[in-house]
Length: 400
Image (tube, rainbow, N blue to C red; front, side):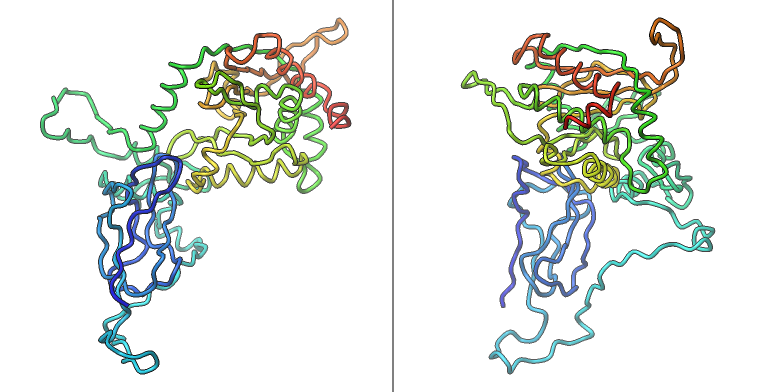
C-alpha cells in the first residue's frame, strides 16, 4: 500500500471550511479504517472526522487551531511498516519500536482523591482549546458549571487581556475577541432573518397551575415527563392544527411550503453559544418520548456534541426563556423557519379565579412569526391552542 492522503471532506450543509480543534492521533500511530483521527469545528458543530484509510499516520497536515478549506490535505496514511515490496503472506514484520498503536480513549471516573489534586473538570474540547489559546492554566480555574465543570465563561474570566494583531489601533480599556466560525454563522443567520423577515410578536399570560401540579404529582414516579415535555407535546398539537407555522417560504416561487414532519428545534445555551438542535419526527412521539428526546438532545448540545444534521433540521423552535429567569423575549426567527414559541419562568402571581383573587403559577408565552405567511388570526389561534392546553392539560392530553 502506498501512502494515501486524506483530504478534509465535505461536511455538508454548504460548509466550506473547518478549524482543527484537536488531533486524536499522532504521527507514527497505527490507525484503522473509520477510526476518528481529528476533531474539527465548523460553523455548526464540533465533529470527529474518521479516516477512510488504515495504516501508519505519516503526516498531519495542519496544526491545532488552523482553519482548512474543504478539499485541503488533512492526514497522510502510509503502510504500517516493512519494505512494501513483498507478496501477500510473505511480508516482513513491522518494527515494533518504530510503530506505536494508539490506545482507545476510555474515560475513567475521577475519585475524590483525584479531585483533591485539582484535576480540571473540562468536558468541552472548545473550552480546552480556548484555555490553550489564551494561556489559562485550567488547574487554577474554579468551575462554575454543574459538578464543578469548567465552562467557557470561567476560562474567559481567567483570561489575560488579548494583544491586538499588528495594524490594529490599540485603545486603552478595550479587549478584542475575533469572531470564530460559529459566531460568524450565527451573525449571518440572524442578520438575514432580521433583514428578510417582517416578524410580528404576540404574547399571553397563562395560568400553568394545573400543569405544574401534574408535573409535581409525577415526581414520585421515575421517568415522569418534565414541564418542557408537556409544552412540547402541546406545541406539536398546535402545529398540526396550524401547519402554516411548520413551514418555510419559497421566495423564488412565491409559495408557502408546509412540512409533514415536525422537527422540533430546542434553543440550548452551550459553551459555543446558543444552538438549536432538533428532535426529528416529534409528531410521532408521546409525552414520555419527547421528554427522553429533550433530555438527550439538550445534554449533548451542552457538551458540544450536536451533529450538523441536528442543528440544521429544525422546522419550528421552542425556546425556554424561563431557564434564564426571564419572562419573555421578542426573539429573532431562526431562518429559514417561520415561527418560534418562547416560554418564560413560572412564578407565583396574583390571579382572578371565579371572581376571587388568588395566587397561581403563571407564565408568559411569546410567539414570533413571519407576517408574510399569515395574519394575526392564525397566530393568535396557535398561541391559544398551546395556552389552553397548558391551563387544562388533562383534557388536552385526552384529545391527543
